[in-house]
Image (tube, rainbow over the protein chains, first blue to last red):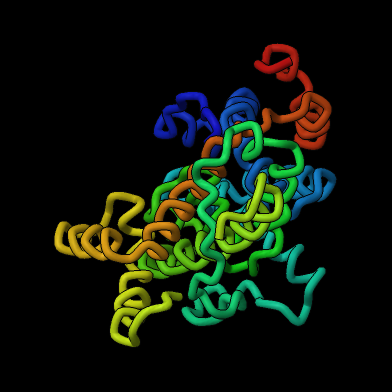
Length: 205
Length: 91
């Protein structure tokens, strides 16, 4: 979870709407690292994450008059960033899930969720769990989730947004967030279990 | 998922839906008790719960990357906010 500087949005928002450049810089300073991180985990590409970051703030500042303050500014910025990232994914994989498909409940594209891998890797030493290779496998596993599951997992478990915040960002129900988070976690557990079983000292099952 | 009877497998599958809530501490007391009682009897489900918990922890523990300074600089430039870059943090 990214440590976001404390910021009083009720003070900042009127200044943003008034076109105060110092307020713009303050918003950028407060939220840019977190939004970049979301885009990077969504897209897996530093160059694309940077593009999304720039587009997000350009869109936000251009449309700040239309922001009514019904959600937090940070939620609104996350929504713009997540939608920008999802649109890029859709262009790369046109036959895959569309942004509109995010409102569906059963289209995660990650198949059966019944656990198959039953190797208990919890007790592996940190030196094996935290290798660079393991980290790369963790990132690849997230990138292989369907868009609908990945965006929920990134916002909830990597960025630490609450269920309701995630629901607000994606404009889906809290129960849809919970259900997708569960499916994402199970898919990642399956993948990491297979990986650590291969990486572990010996097979115990 | 269990080399057990069909009714026990059914129990494993039924509890599966509640595991995420359980791990987040959001499951109701009755569901927690049911999951814990089942785990005590079912080794496979215990492993699934433990490795699921560990999976989430590993991702949560991964330290977030700070915004790279060149990305930050180009962002300020794209927004025509260069004048504020020198007074910012993280450089």
